[in-house]
Length: 179
Image (cartoon, rainbow, N blue to C red; front, side):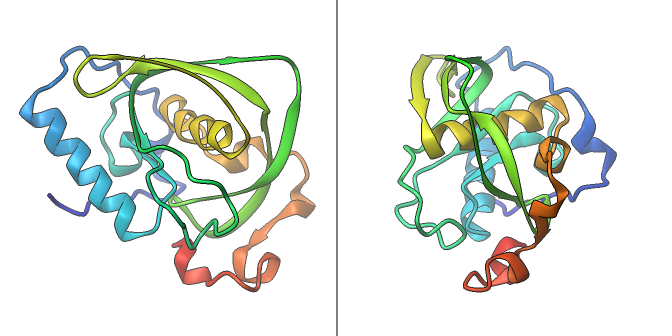
């Protein structure tokens, strides 16, 4: 396992449309997922998308952390490997909440997301995943899957008076934890 470099906003690799994965349960795929888990854990991430480490594949991981210092008041999201995801909104309700991103260190912004979604895809073994979720879980999935279509959360911010440095907006959160 290796901790990989996380690309930062401005890197053109983050703006690509990721390619679908066609082969599952391979040593290469398992090694990539292990590297992503180690990388995410090393920086207290809530999730990580393969494009964030320069791998242009439709693969995201998220959850599995009982208390995340970057999001201390948020509920636990189940540890998930999600490949070739499809998100379907349920209803028209949007919720606004604050987001940060490992590729946008030190900043937070208020971002609209669908309140309820269904997501489908595969796990690393090629087994189907089909979940209906809301709240923080839905937000994390949408945020990570945005990376697969070349979007970073600042591209979704509607009110830039609600975008700024974590240490200013949330003085109780160590800005270094957002890096």
